[in-house]
Length: 386
Image (cartoon, rainbow, N blue to C red; front, side, top):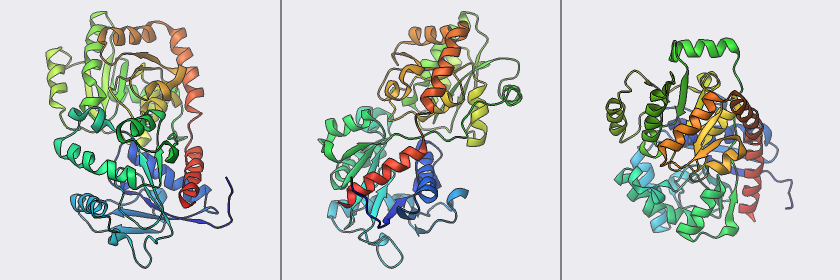
């Protein structure tokens, strides 16, 4: 692909980095940081976000040129959808010192305004199509109406996995020629913690007992129920481990709480809530095993973060997870509690297997970098301009 000396003008939606805490937040923040630091000669970057909540940009982006929109969350989403339905350029983004028609607009979450110039849409997953019961009715209705419009309107689409790319073609008949798979990266801060840090984190989160770790928003598709049933089996087999369910509480979490009680696991399951990024490497490193029993993941970033911290991983074999984890995890069906418990048991009782998974995990995680993600994204911007 030929390169020109002209800097690409790009407007990037930094909203997820401002308003969210999960994988979308890390994607938007790390992509923006790497574009600003490594691609200043190629990209003239401007950030845009909806300033409805009073939240601000992460520290690493505070000095970036930006435009804010003073809209409420629902007004932002519905006005973007209306612009696509009416095929009318989204005027709040246009004008002096704002997104200009010749610039590439990059929608980093599933929200693409109608604009006169080239647009790039990142699609993280189509879970609302594959598992509609795991979305709220309002969100499901919005996305089912909006996403086909966004996919059709985007000049180029970034899919975060081959699984997501296949879903786009299967569900929306998206043109494969305009889809590029660009994997997420792992922040270098995720690395094996020191012995002292691991000891401190165990004392803080699970004093006196080793622990299994599951990280992610507490919502149905993460399949906490499978992890709980596996824990009950491990406990019956004499394993002393607690299970830490780390993450903000999503919707429909009540059944998980009820299952904890029904299985008699009140003293074995800990819910520490959200843990900020600075605390995660030690939390991963000190885990006896990290669990990823998800029914569906567009990418599954916690798997790679765990591997980067030398934690062995037991995962479901669903959706993108085997694609991302490769040979560095053990896999079972997300519906097989006996098999999932057996895989964890192997990790806990066979040190050689656990060590092999740790070693393979470090190699696997090293293949996914935000630097590569940013470089490949710049190439998508160039394709959008042609």
